[in-house]
Length: 163
Image 1: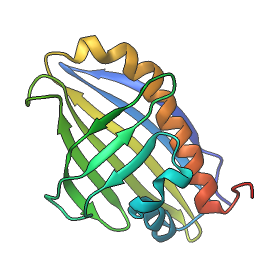
Image 2: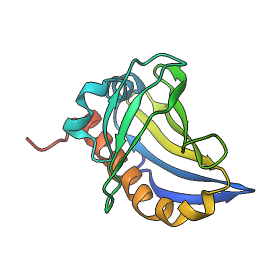
Image 3: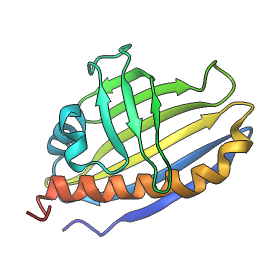
Image 4: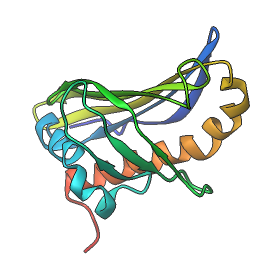
């Protein structure tokens, strides 16, 4: 039986950078979780944080993602996919205007816990000279967005979405 693991998002300062880290145990296989994450067309149906993603799921590909952290008007980002490794990892990297101002590398990791459960890790590694200006937002709305998405993904994968 899968333990009830759900670490609330935590912002950690790392040298001149930072990382927002969260994880949740899901009673589902990595393949099923990957299937949900990779189906960008369905994000508006279930994902309260990443409202949409457009683009092809290929390394080096550009995507357009609309993020809506709680309490925010939202934002559109255009990162590059740097790793697409089904059913284990999806990773993209983006920046604000130019590299070095405010950069983020978003990571979804899926690790099997046993035959029918997995650990989903969502984290983002931040850097750039403007990072101190954004830390309050990262610890607040962005962290809540991670938590809401993790919960929604769990509900989707476990089939516990209310009809």
